[in-house]
Structures are given as C-alpha cells and as structure tokens.
Image 1 (cartoon, rainbow, N blue to C red):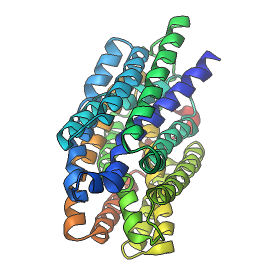
Image 2 (cartoon, rainbow, N blue to C red):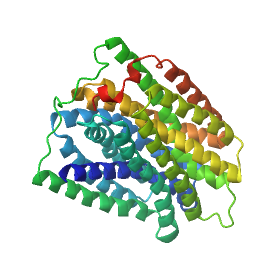
Image 3 (cartoon, rainbow, N blue to C red):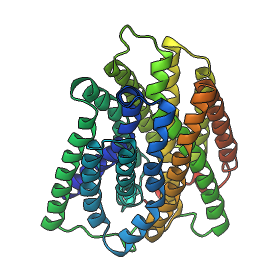
Image 4 (cartoon, helix red, strand yellow):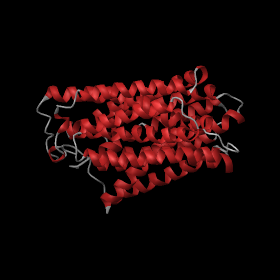
Length: 397
C-alpha cells in the first residue's frame, strides 16, 4: 500500500509539474493580451526565466537529492511550487509575473531528476511504468490549457495559479506524513541487476550521445507544440464566439490523445527494440508537422492530434534508455543532465516562437519542427545495431 501510494503521489507531482509550467501559456494567449493590452509576442518572453530555471536548477536538485534525501526533495517540490504559484497569481505587472514564473521554474526543476529516478527505482520492466508516469505529466499539460481557460471565463486568470497552488501544498503535507509514518529507503546501490550494456563503455557513450542530441531536438518539439498549441488553434480553427473555454477544450483533446499514444509507446518499449519504436515516432512527427504547415479547421485539429501523439510518445523513450544503460547510483545525475538540456532548449525556444509568430506565422514554425524531427530520425538510425536493442529482461530498472 505504501509503495502504491508513493507511486500515485509521484504521478500527481508530475501532473502538477507540467501544469504549473504551462498555465501562463494559456493566460498570455487568451487573457493578458486583452487585460494588459500587450501582444502575444510581447508577453511570451516573461515566461523565459521560468523555463531557464526549469533547466538550470535540475542539476543542483539531483545533486542535493543524492546527498540528502530524494523523498525530502519531493516535499520541497510540492510545497515550494505551490507557494510560488500562489504568489504568481497575485502578480500585478509583467515583471512580477516573470519573477513568479522564475520561482515556479526553480521548484519545478526538482521533479524530473528526482521523481523519475524514484519511478525507475527497483524496476525490471520500465517502459510502461515510465509511460504511465509520463501520461500524468502530459495530462498536466492538457489540463493546464483546459483548466486555465475555464478559470479565465469563470473566475479570472489568477485563480488558475492560486487554486492548484493550494492543492500542491496540501499534497506536500500528505507526502511528508507518508515519510514520517514509514520513511522509504533512498536508492544507494539499488539491488538492481547490472545493465547488460554497462560492460561496453563505447556503446554506452554512443547511446548517451544520441540520447542527449535527441533530447535537445525533442525539447524544441515539445515546447513548441505544448506552449503554442492554444494560440495555433485560436488562429487556425474558426468558432462562433472564439470562447477561451472552447479553445481550451480543443487543446485538452489534442493533449489527452497524445497521452494515450504515450501509453502505447511504453507498451511497445517493453516488447520491441527501442530503436525501431523511436524511428517510428520520429517519422510520425515529420508527417504530421508537414500536414500542419498549411492545415486549417478540421485538418488543423487532426494534425494537432497527430503531432501531439508523436511528441508525447518520444518522452518515455530516452528515460527508458537511461534506465537500461545507467547504473542506479548514477541515474539521478544522468537524468539531471538530460533534463537540463531539455529545459534549457525549451527556454530558448520561447523567443524563437515569439519571433516566428510575429514575422512569419506558425507555418514556418511547423517547417522548423519537421526538420528537427527528421534529424531525430537520422540520429536514431545509428542505434539500430547497438545495445539499445537489449531485451527488457536483461535491463535493470
């Protein structure tokens, strides 16, 4: 029961992590452009400090977790990000909201190097487990658009920060109480089997190089699609009233479909060579980004569902690869490097989105994303004959 409850709380943490990081995307697109009389391109840069912190603080978070307590860091995550969100909801200027988003990013950085390491801890088959955890994170992305749009129409954009912030603080108390009742052991040497590919140092380095390269491009794809989707749908899909809630519902549908696709990918990772699953996902990205370049109305929604399935489907693959080739004691640090790359790229993507939208529109963005997906496909092709195709039974979780 204790183990199941811990996994549930880790999943809820992943949900909140991505929700908090994307609340502002919908707030900027659907509320502040009117309330603060600022253009979408002018507002986007205020989210940049948060995403920079999201990346840069992953490394110190992983280091501190290894030397103090992974579970203690999760309590800090819940309470810290909750308080930061409440404070952001009280912002009265773009500068204040930028500072609040920075604080959210600092605490949000804790989850991936710490929470994912706990999800992988002591597991043999990691594909579906990581995918389930990933779905919770993706649903946080989806609900960020839906819930924020709902609050904009009903209570105002501030409630979209404050209400989840209160919930997060409450969950932090629950996690702390669970620790006090039965303190879980922090992973040291693990008790896991030695990864089958650990003996070949060259193969491990080659796989890690591909992981980090595809992580960087995947961060570009993921950030561009998740952050810009509400605005893309608002521009490409005609509605009678253009109500924020309707756009939020469309975004939620696309995100939710993408999450279900991630479960399929997780299932396949436990049963088929990772390289071929990865190549299929990358090829899907190229296809649907190509369709989205000129898509309007129903075709734009169809393309959005397709590229969200592919973008979300890539998420568990690199984590599973790290779980298979990295020793348990090194996972938090390797995951920290991976997510530092991801989130630094995500932060730098925001100014790119703003410039592309202001000067060329979203058609150019989709061309850039299709090119990035093509590079991912080429990189993954180099792994077809490597130890990445280990059987799942020989991989340490």
